[in-house]
Length: 188
Ligand code: SF4
Ligand code: SF4
Image (cartoon, rainbow, N blue to C red; front, side, top):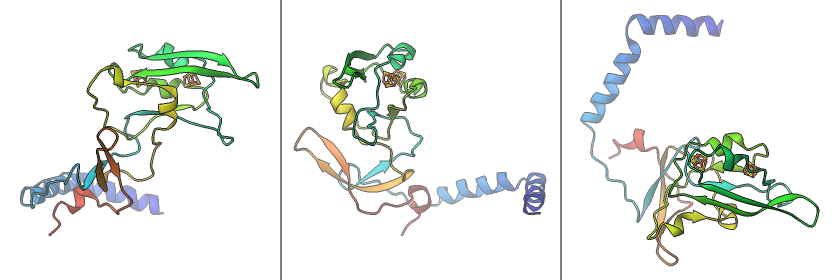
């Protein structure tokens, strides 16, 4: 029954252009909304949705071992040839990456490496602050990839942040509660 009701509503909405009217109303309301400047990088930063494809990170299993089995599928499928994997056999006889480098200067963030990985060992996270002073610094190695932040549950809003210039220039998200940028743009 609820499905039938939803279908009826959809049909009525379609007949009376309800979605179009809704979208136009939203656009109109933003035309008269107050301009809000996001206080980046000193106080706030944008937290992308979890589907965002930013800086890669390598995952660990429950025992804390790197999940990557150095099969090199990600390197093979990468259209930019920006992944370098050099395998070795660890003390347990497992195949692991001795070298796992990604050249971020060449990466186009297509996500194919994540899709191809048979071990669910690599993913693209929500980190987007990749600027450096040299292209050499854009080559990110295995240990750095293991320490990159993973995906967060939250996204699509502004979170509190703090500019840190002690070790390079980074903007760290704080625990301070953020807000829904799109809905709160009309905040007073
Ligand atoms: S996201 Fe695409 S271009 Fe970047 S490393 Fe992965 S496969 Fe290569
Ligand atoms: S990240 Fe995945 S696809 Fe790439 S080498 Fe490791 S296990 Fe293979």
